[in-house]
Image (cartoon, rainbow, N blue to C red; front, side, top):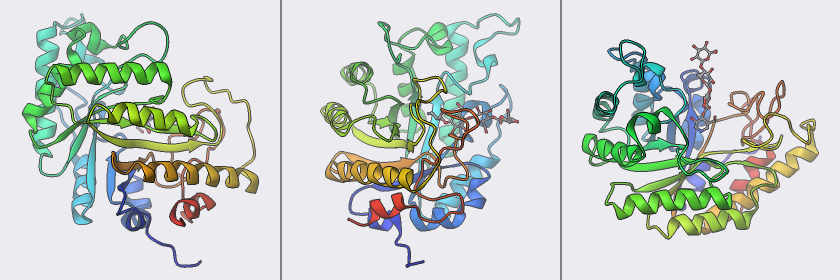
Length: 334
Ligand code: G3I
């Protein structure tokens, strides 16, 4: 091997470089993490169903391990995520009879969850994805019809940010979403965040998940979304970057037009795509504060079986043996 430069050192003049980490990869990918990343996000371990599985039971061990690791290595921690329609116990929204709980009960549970979790990590976690994926992908609606909306009403998002700010006044608070460059959806995200800012809600940033593909979204679509969001005066984080070699993230429902073998041709296409993405992001370092990959290396990603069932995807910069791919060299050599 030629000696491998540190990705996070290479990007120190631009923005933090992060990775989503889970309880397993915190150990199996430790070398890559300490060498190439200066920010971490818990892939699942800080989500409600994992950290607070029952009303009177919290499970902090895995989140503590991640936070301790980050502190030991001087790494920033992104908190992910408080209010989301996914991975939240159904019981949060139900009363003892299994009926839908009242807004007052759900709001009190939300306050307690946020106060407990943000209180525990207020010295360790610099920013939180307070609300994740709350606007609809397509169609004429605006907010996703989630249990949060059904029980708390459409000001649940403002409520969540105010509760989070109350619990951790120093934490930077983000709204996080995917397909965030699609014109219709980015307009909805823009409108949501602009409205919150107009109401004086404490929101400091937008998380652009960045679950992108080889050719889509086009660079100018990404740049338009960055400009639109930046015009609100908020910070931008790319929060879940990966580049699926097998097509659409939330569009083709698991079938993909092209199921190619991961050969040199595909590796080159992936490297070229990452080179162009990072060239764009570097040019926008004035508003992009951090770029987090949704995983560390190809041997442990959420993408296996998605978007193509039964197929491994190769979305990251390090291969299944933790070696640097062509895509790695394409983003460090510039
Ligand atoms: O914890 C259970 C375990 O007890 C059980 O044995 C196992 C088998 O069923 O499932 C485990 O839960 C899995 C969980 O990850 C923890 O590993 C769920 O099945 C699985 O669906 C869940 O997937 C996560 C997914 O969010 C859930 O929506 C992925 O790991 C995670 O990468 C993904 O991350 C999301 C972001 O949070 C938000 N943006 C989209 C992104 C990709 O979907």
